[in-house]
Amino acid sequence: MTGEPPPDKPASAPGKHIRLTSHPGQGASGAPPLQWGAADPLARGPVVGSTTNRSQRNVIGSHSGSYGVYRALAVAAGNLVKGHRADLTNTAPTDPVGPHPQWADPQKIVSIDPWGASVQTVFADFLERGYDIRPTIAVTKAHIHLPEIRQAIAFQRLKPDGRILLDDASAAVTKIAVEPVWWLPGVAQRFGVSEADLRRALFEETGGMYPELVTRSDLEVFLPPIGGQTLYVFGDLRHLADPTVTLTARVHDECNGSDVFGSDICTCRPYLTHAIEECIQGAQDGGVGLIAYSRKEGRALGEVTKFLVYNARKRQEGGDRADKYFLRTECVAGVQDMRFQELMPDVLHWLGIRRIHRLVSMSNDKYDAITGSGIEVGERIKIPDALVPADAKVEIEAKIAAGYFTDGAVPTEADLAAVKGRGLE
Image 1 (tube, rainbow, N blue to C red):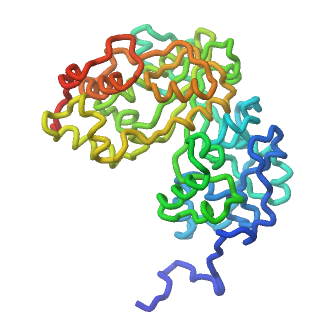
Image 2: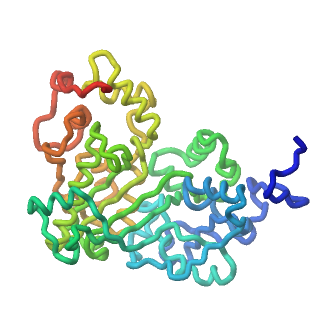
Image 3: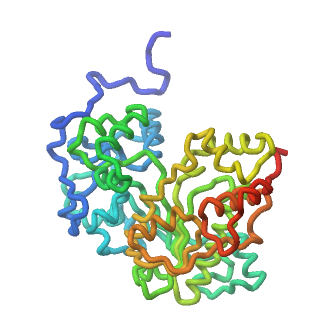
């Protein structure tokens, strides 16, 4: 080995060095100040997390959440020019959102940038002056096709109307992608911990990936390397902020195995598609529907942990039983659930929501987080018994016993012990 670069790979430029920005005063003089919760976007200031000009950065981390790692790989491989600036021509939202009063309340929104969808307009002056500001929210239109909706039409539970549900059985939606933008003082307060303890835990548990968390207390905003959210709106998006218009909504946490591939060990896909049917029906009846889909795979424990738990559940003595449902997760992960719904209502406040008339969810954690944030909830809609897969009865019965909403009897310990799933065949 000669130490020369591989063929077709450019050699490093002479004098190239790594520039650390982990201490105040190292190139932050051009960074615009951030005043989280300011009603006026210019008083609030833009979130600048791009790496094209480090002197302009006013946050910890970088854009695109976990996909920022792929961007780094593209730069390293020579497929992406370092410092590329996005051309934002014609990328503006298809539907305007807000501003709503909640945007100016730092207690209501701490985990997303309320102005993230409109940087092209509200921060046009900064863009003209050379600041590389990226949208953290994108709003577009789509048609979604689901076999369950075709089935609902075939059984005459739904009927195409040409507006919400089209003749080809697709549903017309407004689709919104949201990246996480954390205001650390607010996130710490939301979890009831000190900001210093939060910063230290984030630094240590990410293997020291972001030293600015502990060295730059002047930087209060963090772009975490996690998945974001996607919102699907059925009907007029503006009606979400009108408490007199009936809102049917589900807040759903990602489950790739069920949502995409139809795995029957849980109720995720059948409950999601049932909620979509309810949203379509509600919008056709003059209301509006919302699905808020969060990237929190496996209760935010990840798919590897989730599959390990599946094996442990089905191999334990006595088989997969509802009375041991949570125990096996705790044995593997050390905790039952890491989704922490405390941050979940932020996106609802961003949409201006004040009342959810029909919440298609049985989760007590989600209900408590939503109502605890000041949003009223009317009717709660459980998953129909007929939609619960046989192997998912272990999950749903264990959750009802733990506090999930039900209009029926709460199972006893003896009842739970009798609910068993199949083995690993």
